[in-house]
Length: 235
Image (cartoon, rainbow, N blue to C red; front, top):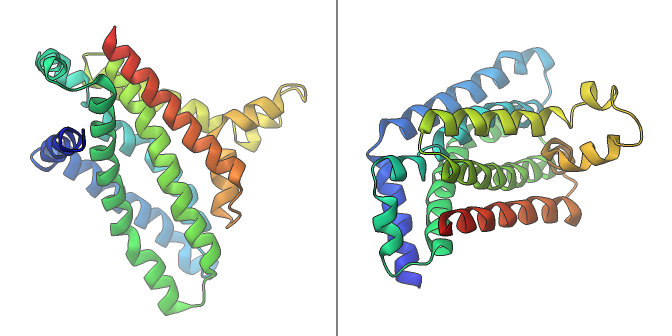
């Protein structure tokens, strides 16, 4: 089991390393999050990363679909998914391997943003709690969003459709947690939207407040989406 899982992870990493899509996506991600943050950093004159993580959530809406859109859609288009599933591998192992491979690329992208906290440390005295909480929230949100992208990719054999649908669903899950939306929602159902939206849970952790309920939210939804992806491959 361990060897087959590692083989799938290596296959996924090789796909990213030999595809310009990953380099373009990660490169644009780094340019955008750094530019959006530093363009106002010296005006605000505060050694904190709250705006950085808020910007990162928005940029995720484009980065994650770009990383996940080809996971199964391209396999189905190239008629290699059937071959992959005929090997002595369970669909769950295939899904987990692709998820881990994509997640490692996401971790690399976040590691490359390490210049931001180091710059803040050199210029001021930022509180470590919100920075650690923000990066943990970014990893958990990235995992959730990747699992959504894998599920959508398993539903389609077109990368553009997969990218667009993942971005739209992610945008809806983002918007339903904004004050603009919640202030215009009836009080009876507003708590439901607040819970369902990942933005609410992300913002809590980005403040340095590590609540087990927020962690459970991300882990549970990620697990459910990966499970549904495996079931989809079995159909």
